[in-house]
Image 1: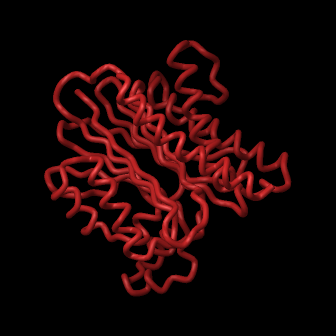
Image 2 (image 1 turned 180 degrees about the horizontal axis):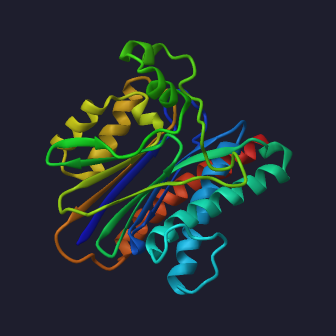
Amino acid sequence: MRIEFAGDTHVGMKRDHNEDSLLIMPEEDLFVVADGMGGHASGEIASRLAIDTIKAFFEDTGQDAEITWPFTTGREDDYDANRLVTAIKLGNQRIFEASNSQLQLRGMGTTVVSVYHSEGRLFVAHVGDSRCYRFRQGNLQLLTEDHSLLNDFRRSLNLTPDEEKKFPHKNIIVRALGMKNSVDVDLEIFPPRVADTYLLCSDGLTGEVDDKAVERVLREEKNLVKACQRLVQMANDAGGRDNVTVLLVRLAEGDSPEFDELTEEVTRELTEDVKGQLTENSGSES
């Protein structure tokens, strides 16, 4: 099975800095979106720290499968599931430690949502309200559940659509990386199917564009790069009140190609673009 992918991130129309980060790691079939929270530049730092930690852990364990892991694994004999969850928990630990060691970073955190393909299984892990959808045979399905105050009220009080629109605390997250010294990571495992497309996104997309409109774009646009661009533009056209990040992962027939120079260049450009924004904004706050 071959993995096709594309990603895009934008500061939006109202913010002056981008707190979102994304990881495209095709050599591991790992894809991650993080949406940082916190004042000044700390949101960018939290999301970047999560991404960098997850990436480093996958690099280390990819070179040495017997490396000592920092947490007790929760699923016996399931190396891949434990690998993904441990990487995210390690990101939480790094952010929590940084937050408590520097006053200007106090209270920072980030959401994270990830897709990881290995050994004929598709792993979806997340914390917070960044989402993962699956687009299959023309239909879009939400695979994650928001860890937000709105979602808690939605479940307990059966809010109507109109009540949800008027809910005064839509942006309050009840679970995120960095909030505590430990974190529960939601994990689901799916059998991969050729032609399925997985959408990872920050709430900058879902807060502005409804699911039906997203579904329509994925039906109409088969080019993943153009689909990402359209979704980001739709969010900005609808107001762009938040940073928006979109990452599309499609399962295709055939063997995965080698991690060639073109793929490496595209991945590096995306990563450096986000890092450049982080450096610029961190410098402006100092």
